[in-house]
Every structure is written in C-alpha cells, then in structure tokens.
Picture 1 (tube, rainbow, N blue to C red):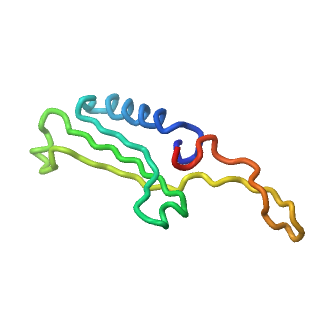
Picture 2 (spheres, rainbow, N blue to C red):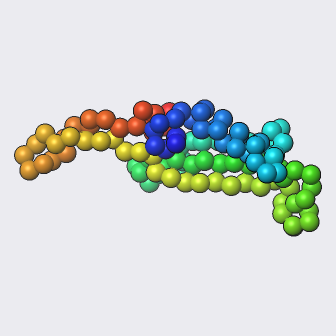
Picture 3 (cartoon, rainbow, N blue to C red):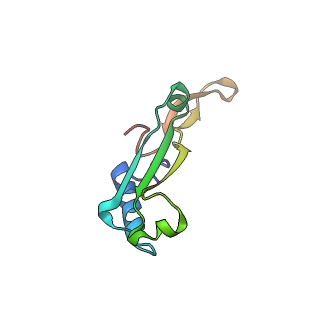
Length: 108
C-alpha cells in the first residue's frame, strides 16, 4: 500500500508488524524489524522510483534449529512506486502536465 501512495510509510510498517505478531505461530515483537523505504542503490532505482520493504524477524521457540534455518530471517520485496497521472494539453495528445498521483509521493 505504500507503493500505491495510499498509506504512509509508518502505516505500512505498523501493518507489517501487526501481521507478523498476529500470525501462526506469532512472532515475538521484540525480535521484529521492519522497514519500508525508497531503494536508492543507484540511478536506476531513483529514476524508476523503486521501493523496498524489508521484514527481519527471529522465529519463535527455537524450531528453526530443527529446520536448519538461520536464527534471524530476512524477507524483502521490491516494487515500483505509483506514478503520477498526466493530462494531455498539447497537440497530438502529448502528455504535458501532472494531474494527480499518489497521495504519498516517492521518497516520503
């Protein structure tokens, strides 16, 4: 929802945290770190307005040892931020003026 521009970064991070603590099995809130941010690893990421969501957590109760999983698991998702909408003002249908777009602009 952050990348769509309909929710703030803080709202999405809160929802991610609630999802991880309310799942089965529920995760310990002290072992969860979530981050939603613009992915700015290079000019391409900034040009295409790429966002990254990261969830890092510790599995509960030590069952990860039985599965051979690491004690801390990191999952991430990369997605393009919602674009602005444009209106045609020029001859031949040229797109000239931003008309609308995400409520939460890229990078905020």
